Each structure stands twice: as structure tokens, then as C-alpha cells.
Length: 196
Image (cartoon, rainbow, N blue to C red; front, side, top):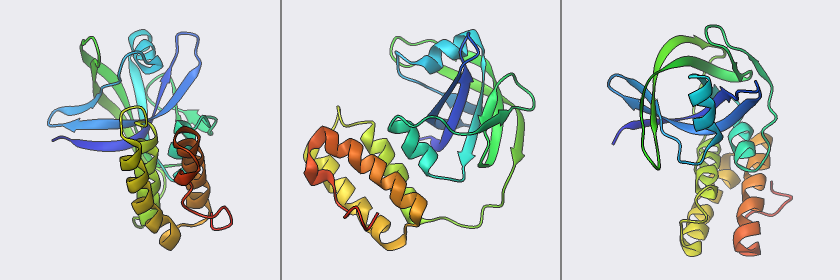
């Protein structure tokens, strides 16, 4: 299995509108690949403007927010490609699309890194941030997974939230819980709102 880095990817639409989305950047021996499922604004954007930025957000709410309809996060201009990147990030990389492997379901856009930069020190991992990340990914697969599996996974992830989350992580968890509860019912609310 390849290494997958969970990032925030930004692309530009032909109109110039920014598209910001959480994305697993697939690491391969010769670079990084984006493989969005059709239909996807990311695909249309890469076909029109073959470049993208991948950022590692400092605030886990960016990922949780993007999967729950909150996509307005501050961005800044990229250094080497036309486009923008997430402003509050540990670091980012900018890519030009070097090649495309077309596929009816999931084309693969191989990126050639043209610039990268670190923006803030990374001091350590936090279990609640990892739990929010996993819950965010889980929330995008509600249509594919059995409700019992989702609820079991959410219950396990909630342990890290209860033990190690700060205010940002609790807010992000709440957004994901609300999304899952809207799809599966109130039993998906695992933490008391006051505990969030």
C-alpha cells in the first residue's frame, strides 16, 4: 500500500474560483498523485489549470469543516504556480500536473513538485486531531458503510476526543458528529454538547 498524506488541496476553476478540499495525496516512488473520483470539481479544475497546492493544516477544523460544508478558510497566493494555498499550515507544496492516467471512475493526476515551504514548527502529534481526521474520512463514506460499523468507529474515536481534545478539536468533532447524526440518527452523538 502506498503512503497517503491527508492534506488540504487547492485548485482553481476556469473562472478563477478557488476549490479547497481535504485530499489524500498518494506518495509513490516518483512523486505524488491525486486520484479524485468522478464527478469532481477537482478533476475539471486540473484539466483546465493543471496545477495544485497541498497544505498540512495547523487547525484540524479545516479538514472537519471542509467535509461538513465549511470551506471558507484563509488562503494566500502560491509562490510558483497560479493559485492559492491554505494560509495557516505547517507547510505546503506546489505541484504541476506532469501526467494523467485517465480512468472512467478515478483518473490519476501525477504531480511534479515545483515548490515547497515550511511555515510553522511541528512540535508533536495529538490523538484527538487524529481522531477528528479519521472521523472526517468516515463521514465521507456514510453511503458505503453499515451504520453499526460507523457508530462503533465513532465510539472508539470519541475516547481520544474526551481524553486529549482542546477547544478546536472539540468543535471539529461536533461538526462531524452533527453530520453523522443527521444521516444515522441521534445515537451518533457520543459526547455531551457541554463536553465539546
